[in-house]
Image (cartoon, rainbow, N blue to C red; front, side, top):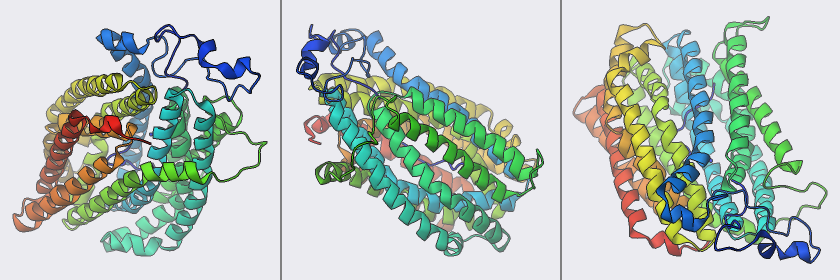
Length: 502
């Protein structure tokens, strides 16, 4: 069973097509005329602005919208299936009882912290690949991919080993009840080896999306989620001749599915079929300059994600102290809410890629227009998603459980989050746009201040002091999104990100 992060965030060739200013591909690719390798030459323009051109994107809103949609729809399709799979996962686990639901939800919090550590490498990879592709330097985009993959592999192996050994302490740290501890330890220990494969998946997908290729990661992750769903059905309940393994089966199915997906991505990148390629026949050497640039961009993003995940972990501790039923309602509502966050994440990917590539090509005006247009499209769709959450929350909760108390608690908090959908879309898109520009420090400060000063602090006040229960925790979550969305929009509107050097 795959975990759903609270703020998860992630294209192809040159963003200076021949249609831009009448410059031909041959003029942009002198390497071919001089006999250099194809890797050194600027590739055929098939990236974010292929077939459109910067001036056309600025002059015609429909052209910009089509470009954004072309990048976003594969991510939306991928996330639709991922969300449906996660919902089916939770439904399957929910049939095992509230203790199993709580075990999965609590165990995922430390894993989200570990995943957040690697988000920095992912963000740095996307930003640099997008800049190099925008500047027509495919060779250095390939080098960034190779350096990031090797660095992430080493760090993921180390962190996964530490996490496996520390599992019992981590589960108890999350204040799991006596009926939850055994399930939580079994789930987390089985999922830890999959952390390694998840990280490689993140980095390879980030590189492809930074170059403009959102379709292949979509195909891989759709297949991965189908494998996960089938594995859950087989291993949780003991179908197809497999033993019934309960929550451990859910974790094992996720680990196997991630292994399959990661193998597909690595084959794509190493075989030369990807828009970014890692050459296996060459001796690998660390390029400390490129690694330093990835880290310089990615470290604030990593700190942001780790801080965010830590804040959420302490936030979850406040919720879990309300009891197993309350936390089960919280975990199920979070899962059901997954239907709404997909457009925000997808349009954030579009904003990250287009802003990075446009800045790499020296067109900050295009980057700014792409950011605002991505937000308008995202806010429209997520506003509609909010209406679904507001008018049909009990129906969503009944998909998971039959317990009237859990259904009532979950429905009440889903209505709260329905009102935060547009602020959530605002935070997703503008923070994604700022990451694409390399302005990751600003995103770090916004996320840290909001999650600690707003979500965690207000949750403690509303739940422990005012006694508002689970609803109080969700009021704090909604206000967190309002603050993050407002501040990130203001930062983007200020325009300082246009001068960022990566």
